[in-house]
Length: 538
Image 1 (spheres, rainbow, N blue to C red):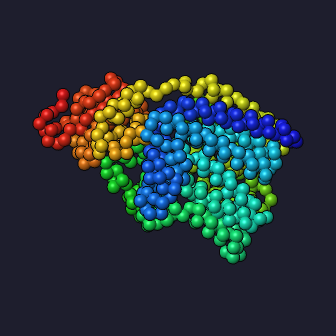
Image 2 (cartoon, rainbow, N blue to C red):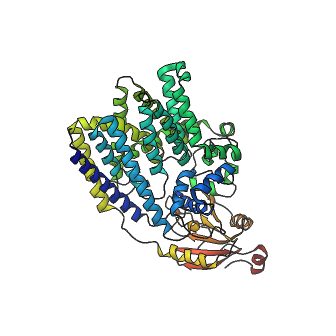
Image 3 (cartoon, rainbow, N blue to C red):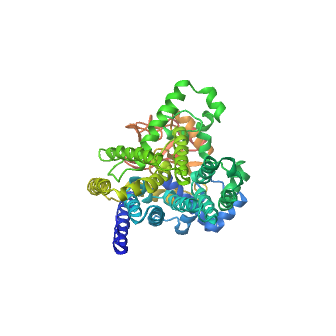
């Protein structure tokens, strides 16, 4: 397909406009942060309070920054617009959309360089209407920044044979990807394995490869050094402790008091307590099925709701595209680029089949599937007009359906707003509060840092925990108030805090402080002595 410069610029601008419109719509619909979004907002506030990106870097090298679940780069970038005010959520979404735009342009550029102008536009069009990309660009997420560095790293890796110094730069981009998210290490690991496959033992004498590894270590050194100093391993991550567990019926239950002590600690402990059924079915069969679902989802178009009647056909189509991409890749003539892509696909699939017992997601495999789309599918679509028209027609159907059937753009839930204001007015410095692990209301991103939020599950193995034990656990953590969100559910059943007592009666040791009838309730945890004097709750 021949394209003039003017037409190429016009089509790229159309892709950018589509991306900004869809990501902006998704951000608008995402009116209240929850789960990972809240974690990033709160950490960004903490980073701002220690001095922003520079202060965060110093805290990593000194070991005083101990957060080991979310990597620090996106947190540091987010700290530039942080603040304990309700507008921070809006600023954070706008910043993440801009990071997504940079990622889209980076992938367009690298695909254009490898496959030509038409291939670059196909990649830009896909990202402009990708469900995975649009969803995580419209919320507080490390994925857009990760994809930006992934594109830069892969482009530098593929250019390395023509310009040896590019591998040094590839190591830098990979190190920054690792600073942003834990799977950045895959970039240099895939490079090392691909070189060994291509060259055998001779690869060990390639100074360019060692240079890429060295520059990776330098770029990722703040995180690697902190992990080694504080946790004893440079690749430490909070999720590592959950790698060898049997599949949980409800991941939110990991927040139950003492849950982590009940789970296996390492491979040997897991192997000694698991069953063969859990191994072959729970980890292998279910792992393959769940990974296949996420692989297909990562190549699907935008949809009104996840795994709804519009989305599911897109997931099936995405998985078909993945299979086609792998077949086309396998039929390519031998080359380092082909070997690297094959190695990356194999390592990603193998790892996430095992990791899915902890909890899978399309965003985990998206860097790999996006590479297959950009360097295998996009060049094929660009030179096959019939394929391209059919693929574009499907995308043209999904976008208006998403706009038409998507959820309404509404404001913050009133009870969340009211409960947040009540806590702001009544919490004293040093007093903490508890929220249920399934609730979308987590106000720690705008409440003062002196008031710690405790996330807790009131069930374990789908059975309610004793109220007395939960209240005792809360008193140990200086919890003054408990937030009960009556919208919390699991498999259609209520799973809010003390759901087996409320709303019929309050457990002993609690009294109501505020409520929005049928929607939300704030309970005060009474000191043990006051609870005994008050007697049984009515």
